[in-house]
Image (tube, rainbow, N blue to C red; front, side, top):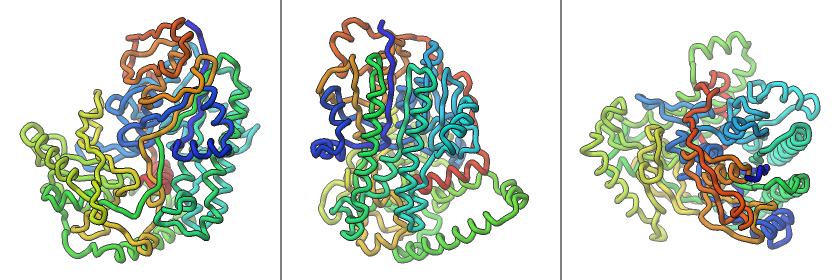
Length: 574
């Protein structure tokens, strides 16, 4: 079988909704060339399209029920608490571990959900789940030393939304461009310095600027302002254009034996002023009980004031912390271990009376959990006698929800976990997953609104008063992108029904490596030339492992958890 190479460029959150019109207008010439000379198509993400499980499925070729990553947080068994996830919690071999085990050389840069880095036959620079540049986020460590000496200080995340939150929008754009250039310089240096058979680099800038700047370019967005649109409406295009130039450089650097793959973990589109409060709906249906169903939560005005006070308090406490001697900081950390995880748990669940609740949601996610006897500390739903009936009741009720203004359905679909996941990590999965319609209702926490508010169209003035994070600007959707280009790829074809779990087996096949039989994905044969398929039969291997050999679970330290928590909060994931 032919022994090829693969070069993968990840564009986090990239969408054909933007790419195709810009290609048509001649603004992305290199992507246009790939689409004309190779294969492209929509790449279906995980359900729901969240980066943590999506990238984990890209890495393993498996559905979340097998690799066990469903979100950036994970429920701690036997509790109503959560921890932050990282690669050490992932089940199943990564594609670069499989390749390393057959003596292929690999290079991995900035792929999310790769911290801590595996010991591979090559190098790994972990992605945004890395605590910081002072952590052990590079394997082998000497590669990072080499980068600092030859390229300068590495940037993990641009911190885009932190700058925007301070009103430094121009600086945010500048910092994002600097991050792109830094990752590009590191990619060029390492791909030229070290031998490789498989190389992948992910640029997260597409996702970050879509979340932050969609409202500036979309005249129908509820937060669009013409004067701001004139100044910042071209930022997303500017990022895509620069990445298109980088793609052109990299594709021209590849030999005829290498297949180029461009992909995204999910798509994206504008958010809206429509909100759904899932826990309030469950409360209204008698499935959830609040500890204080009365007068503390008095709607959007109270919410705005609460956010203002919270911002002022947070800023004050942060300034005090930064000025505090390190000895005192360490004492506080010992007194309050795992503070961020506790805070996340508090905001998810503290208002709920679990002893009288049958189902509850995390709300910033469209996950619903059934409060099961024997699994959950205060569970009241019998797993055999009541579980299915509670799920069916929720399904019927949510599917009947209508937009109070348009009369349209609110819910696209709703699934029980065994309808979309399978594997030995199903115990980590939420019991139900809801898909909301594109440009429809956005899940928000019920914590700050009255218990009787379930669906709401927030007036523009009120929306502007809220803490407008990235979830108020743009949302993920399931339609990502994939493109293939190279000698073994068909020309000028558009493929359908590709899934993110299909990429790992397809790339292994292109590289002449047998595919583990426990992968859920399939080889995307419609993307490959007939000649290649005829001369290279697909091979499988039963030699599989459920866990990487060098993988032990690593919990973030208090300091690391603080950094990860701040980053996820800035990105709208907390």
